[in-house]
Image (cartoon, rainbow over all chains, first blue to last red):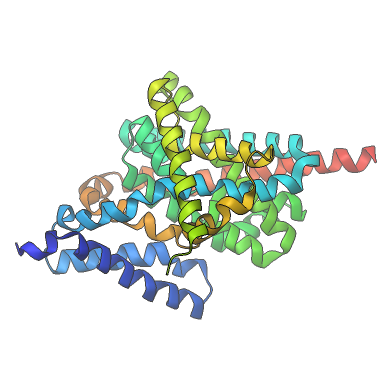
Length: 230
Length: 121
């Protein structure tokens, strides 16, 4: 194996280079299917497999980028604060709706996975799958899941929710912008929120609120509650 | 190139991250340190201990590229292709089924509150 692929700059420049192309592709066609994170992951895996570069070589640089996840999660406080200022009056109904969505998400993901013969490891990795990726990765580490399986499940959930969320909600006769936004953000985090913003301003704002509250509730409760069941 | 305000706000974010990690470790909390750091920063912003302008420059910069930072953990999924091939059915059914459940449960409960409020007013 060639040594230069083990240099951190290999992983960093490969990731940043493909990321820039993926972001450009996304700007040209604004659809959840072209999620830049998913495009970049798929392209990098393709390159590594074709060039027979092991993951550990790539991850020398990957670790450097992933370190920035820490301060980025802290930075989520800024949009959270901006939104909290706006929703103060409705905080209790919003909190209860998201809490119920959050419990439903964890219970249904873990339950369905186990019911269909999934291992405990897979079920645990799926538990935080509705939470925004940076927070979900941290939760997965805390509860003994496989963070990369969690990341893949989160992104897939976001893409599906971003493509079909509003249609699926209208299917049960809910047309309220408030309920729709909250549901999309709680179920499909940031990728869903991008779609909710195209449905309307209120939908987008509520989706952002749902995403943040679900991330927070799950991060605080799941590491304590999950060991009682699994 | 990098402005002083940006560097200072980045240092503030790192400080909150450090405090969050220290609290998580020393109190043996199972909550990720970065989430504790986020909660502390939110509280400081809400109580106006810290003006949002002090953290905005680095926060906005990081958040506009946040997707880039979870690409490497996502690429690690290539280490688990065997596991996914063996367990694709529970994975797919749980992801799709749970998405439906969360969308519908949250939307129905939120609408319930909205109707109650409309009736009261």
